[in-house]
Length: 133
Image (tube, rainbow, N blue to C red; front, side, top):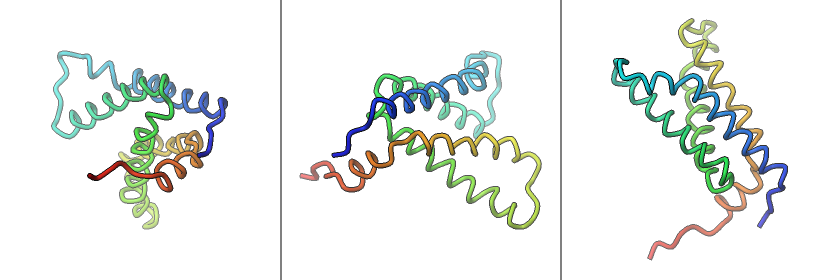
């Protein structure tokens, strides 16, 4: 199995920390505001992102064990970018309200760079799965 270098582990930890600090600054003040009224989807998305930030906090200590959290992140953001704004861009017009979300989701490029893809391939593609019986 491919070993992950200490440098790569620190890069992963830095990515988890970047996410924790970003969501801590942007999201958590609203989560902790008892007067805030939440619409259904906004509330669900905010709670999901809050849970994600907690999982990333754990990732600072356990960077390889929490890789599935980052894989989830790259999957949903890539899907959203391909399904929502990309067709609009191809059509020659991107709706103005989407632009901040496009920028935020485009930062997923940093996550792609931080993930040790050799390790992911060795453990999640080539590695043995869990027992079924």
